[in-house]
Length: 339
Image 1 (tube, rainbow, N blue to C red):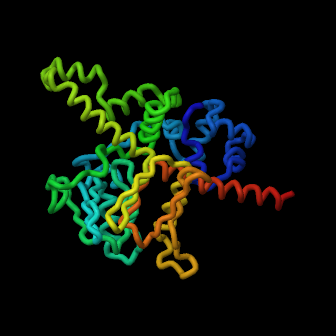
Image 2 (image 1 turned 30 degrees about the vertical axis):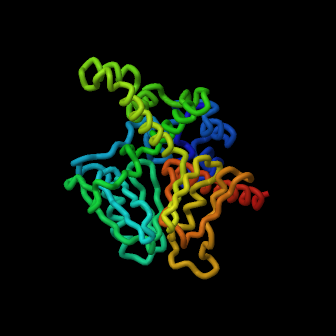
Image 3 (image 1 turned 90 degrees about the horizontal axis):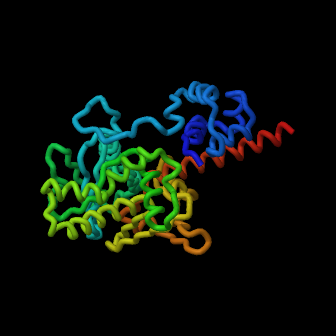
């Protein structure tokens, strides 16, 4: 099955499959086959879809150049411009949280820290969307890239993410690579080979690259085994960022939930506080994380959290699915009314 971005653009434009199909002059079943990748979109209709969604054909196919973190480039979008790091210390004495953030994330967090929002939501440059309970914070430090430090305890910090890769499409490929590593199969076949190879080189060092490093004197032959183990551990950490939810409780205890079989957007949505303050009836008492369907569900008291951290690409995927469900329900209702 080929990968495309038709659903993303359709849902972003708040359209049902029927509405989009009508706009470009085809039936809903035909459009559905395009969106699911079961059949290729004809060139003429791809142009119509791009015009309808006010985007490019490459954007619809997900083949535009990857978005990368920008350094010293004021022309880049603010959500891609690297600001530096933020270091968060907690009242309960739990391990500090250190995130690499963009200029846009810096501005949003700076603003929300001076508000009465219950949770501050920060999206970092390494596939983490983190909801931090405001009253759990004892200290919050911003440190721009010019200082090359993370805060007052610089040497004791550990970055939450080891890589700055802000494009969610890249993390979908990382997830496919991880699935192949864990279960075999050919999960990466849905993506362009050059994209998969580009991502592999970003998240791991191949045998060929190790050979080049040894040949060029960057690694001594006797140190090769140690270097391989260290790089393998880093790769495992990066792969885990695609499928792990991390929870730190106010006691300092952490939870790592690695098997995710639920809609993560619906888990974080109550914490975004877009309608703050809640009425008494709407206040979320517990955070529900049904991470393995019927078999395993965790409930967390939001008042006992330091933070909860999600894979950003999964949040964005699930957000599209959630809104699409609403659009399809509306479409069915309209069809019933018409009948």
